[in-house]
Length: 289
Ligand code: ZN
Image (cartoon, rainbow, N blue to C red; front, top):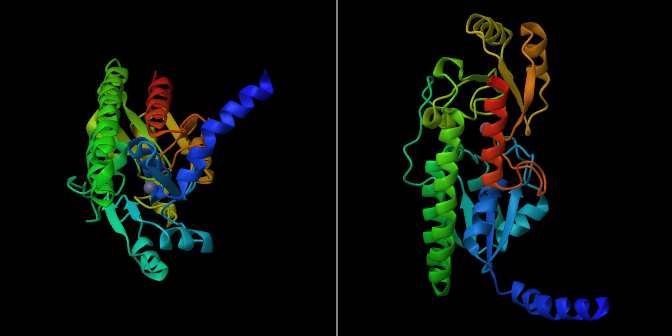
């Protein structure tokens, strides 16, 4: 009986394997975009992710296999807003000739005090609705035969994002505004904070590339004490040494791990974008309560 089931399973699988070669080859710069492309691709797309789960896009170093993937790609999907500072050079080095989708196109970026642009727009679910529309339209332009598929999968996924957005608001509703203060390693959750009414403090800026100065760290510790911040989180993409130092000096307990710039591996607490946003929200609300 088992062997017959196996035979049936193989018979179903093998056309899919044969078809894989004809799928649209889409390279996504990092894990969150890879998940979105997989959702919207609806089986017509073969997504390849460059910066994988728990990896840091800010300091990514392309491998030879990544260059080969980009060289062979039909479509390249990036976040934009300066998140993948290495991408243009890489696409040129790979001789990339396909089409490009910049997922954040049309989103009003958040500026920072020092005149920089915050690239982490994917931390706001409403912005990701824009990402989905851009990916849907870009895939349809590269693969017109799939237009209906992409429209259908995008509509279904947008409904799930609408539910997610409402659930995040509902989760925060019982938490008083003046208690919604959270410390993270780097300044990745500004868009989340602006949309859902949470203030984030971080020793590192918008990128993980530079270490905070002793003076900046001292200032942050004083601010944490003065504002009675009670929630402190490490991030899945960073080693957390600075955060542990802050926890020691302020007595604030580490509330867990937030997934800021990358998903967890599949099967982990944040294996998909939807799971990531639900995990982060539940962890932050629980730490403050
Ligand atoms: Zn970041």
